[in-house]
Amino acid sequence: MRPMPLLRRLSATVRRLARDARGVALVEFAICLPVLILLYLGAYVISDAITCNRKVTRSARAVTDLVSRYGAVSSADLQTIMGSSAMVLSPYDNSIAQIRVSEVQVVDANTAKVVWSKSTSNWTPLTVGNSVTLTTNLVPQAMLPDKTVTPNKPGAYFLMGEVSYPYTPQFGLGFISTITMNDRIFMLPRLSDQIPLQ
Image (cartoon, rainbow, N blue to C red; front, side, top):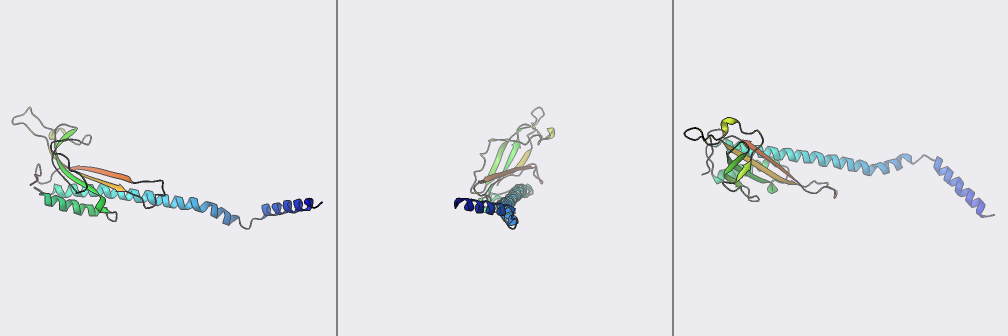
């Protein structure tokens, strides 16, 4: 006889709890909170990564643009320019940015050869004489070399600025590791056909 009232009491308690709605909002909030936090942190990481990528592009543009304004450059000039253009990456850690600037001469519509190259100490300069693939449709016909004329017309010179940055998100949460962001910009010298390295 005793188990029956216990079963009834238990059944009544379960029914009463099923009808009770006093803590529903708190329970729902407790279930949703982790999802909301992940959404917020994910949006922050995506926004921060986009900002960093834009700064990598601006840094590549800055180093190339500054060098293009010289008639001739020295190794010391290039180190100063690369050091100051790294500041464009601020507030990101500019000490880990890899920056390289090179002058290349057009060989054909898709290829150029390296004339000179300098980089920050944490990156390797390009080897003089090596080939570099140019951006599609970068070189107009007038800038291509022409051996059919006398004297032979050499190909145009371009400055090539490159920046590589290993971006590590602040809140990777174990899902996102380091992302390497790269950009490469080509520009023509402004004051002469080419910029010799002295």
